[in-house]
Length: 424
Image (cartoon, rainbow, N blue to C red; front, side, top):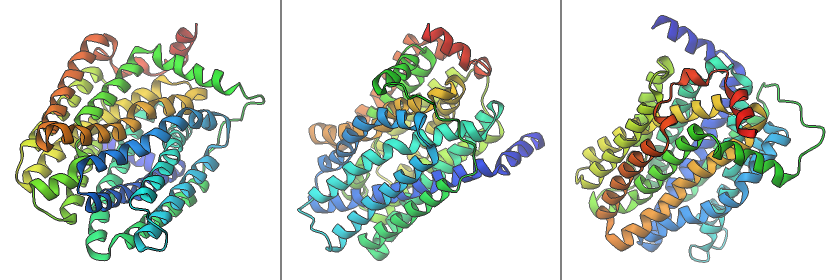
């Protein structure tokens, strides 16, 4: 245990790594405060759960359109500058939302809000590829598993603090101040990434054609059963099993609570993921990683079913906490697999494809949740989603045997070999 603590401490003394973590947590705080505030604002205006689903759809469409091009940009342009411009874009959209909330800018009903959300979708397409590409520049390969655990803790800390802070600020200071606080975090994230101490790879003398370069990344992912299986598993489990988008409706209609409770519920999954991340940072998974990933996603589905059946705030928080613990295991394993299996020159493109699988599934899941709630009812729709998640786990276990049998130690030092085989 003392060896593990020493290795964690060594990582935290790495200024490049800690600077990258600072960028990630500040951007996460900004985005999460905006997410909880927009959800509350939209539901107060419409009182319609489908409008909550439309938030996700509005963001995911531009995300889809720009994600692959963002990955290409990250592999061919200075990564820190791209991260800075992405954070400044997040700052701009948040200021627009603050102007709409204060009445300084015209709202046009909810149209202005949805337009700002759409621009956020473009911005988000750059945030994760920048982080994942720089992650491999500040750490050695043998440190990836522990680094992924620490990175998960930092990200999930932002996911805990952001919603809780957002809900509290809405109740105490109103929408405008809440958006302005989110804008300040976005500005700080821009400063953190541009100040990062890291040696970036030499830019290629000649850039490959955009679509040919994107196709190279797509061929790598779709020819690698382990990478593809891990991404597809998370995508479809979140698509069907996510209930976060419906939390404002559960708070108002089922649990009869206020915005403070909304912040607590949104923070509960991340709190569970933080607990697991702290454990995995000291004891990174190696053996039976594939089986552990499948069991974690199945546990996530069961917790979502338990949340749907709950009528008490404390029990709902507990179910979401446990779901976050399961999801935390999935995040660390998936991140480690992605970093170990991907050659350095493809990291931006593969990360952007991963973002389409993973990041967009949250927004598509939000739309699916809102639509299902409208058609089936609030509680039955979430139960249905949890059952579908269990089905996804069973299908993945059958269709991706290499993932099911995965031992992470098999991936160390194997990225170049894997790529040469898949490119052949």
